[in-house]
Image (cartoon, rainbow, N blue to C red):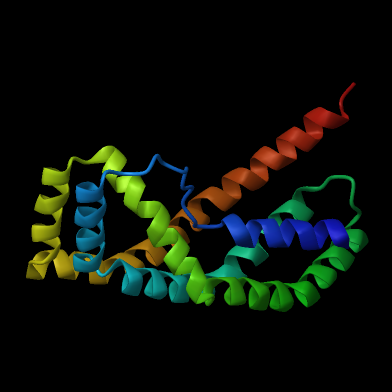
Length: 181
């Protein structure tokens, strides 16, 4: 049961979230330029919208992952699989609520924005950042940013649809190979 909860929690924590590596501090001009760009991009609002979309899809994503793991386990009898699925169904709402609390923590967005400043400054010059800021200030730039949460959610659903069966097959193959001497 604890392993199942840990798997659910890990799946929830990492599903759809990008990996952000800490970057070196940016120079003051680049820092200010990135902050202006992030404001023009309305990143704070986009993150909030993305989190709302993730909250909507997270239970289905977690359920699909857990079902895939349980169904792919050749060591479980059909009855044991049903028991494991029933336990997972009881745990999923609590895990989804815990994930929602993480997404709704206002400090999360602040921390992510603080990490994004040196990240953008690492990959773009101050002049490029200013060009991006100008673009994101245009109607097309604003439309792009407003559409990104929905596009991300739809992309995640498509990825889940395409990846889950493949991962299930892979896990079955790995489990089969692990049982062979």
